[in-house]
Length: 310
Image (cartoon, rainbow, N blue to C red):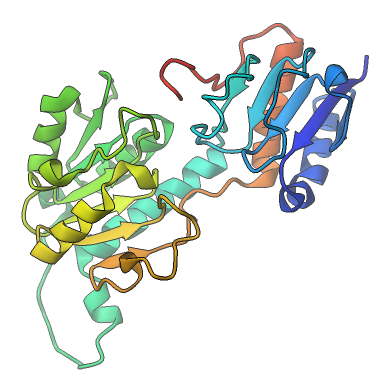
């Protein structure tokens, strides 16, 4: 039987994914029609992005899984019509991109590269940075992405402490959990990386009280979710010098509005949600592997826990 795979995402996504998805389906030996329009009752799988006009999943009575193109699923997981299994995107290429962004900006701040790259006054400043082993890092979020970034930084001799809401055990990385663990991680962190999912429990994880726990001049890197940080509290901490710099890749509203104070603050770097873009060729193989697994009666990869929200 020929499967029907509905591609429910933007025109731009279709241009990127149509050929790689068809190639991945053929390579896997799966007889499937990839389409942008189909009778909902005849759809076997939905490849999905939250920008899709598909918001009511009730008519898709035959659908075996909704396969997200995005790593974050907060915009879909609470949809009451979504009763089908939901799988988030965990792509090796996405992980590699996140590791490169986090390591790059961590090293940038660790080495003080900004003062050399932008130096209009030609100031000769021979200040030598400490070694990486003297610059503690707190990795907030020890899922797939956080663990990969923690290991990469630890390989450069940064002392990395992981934190997550629930206990984790990661070889070589001391991990904390719970409120006391979060406070402990923040109190000693020269660099804080936020890679938590967005859930009601993680919103404003870095609020005024917790930002006040940081050592003077700590750096924050946020490639996770904009809502993890209280914007007003962060700006106040930057103005007070408690936070030395914040490099932010994600925001509550995107694109970041032109009048947002992050754009002009001297201690903020804005990057346009590029830390971990999904690459169509590798992501297509991830999606097709889940279709293969479902057809073979095997467990789906990266299936979302509806209760936890990720």
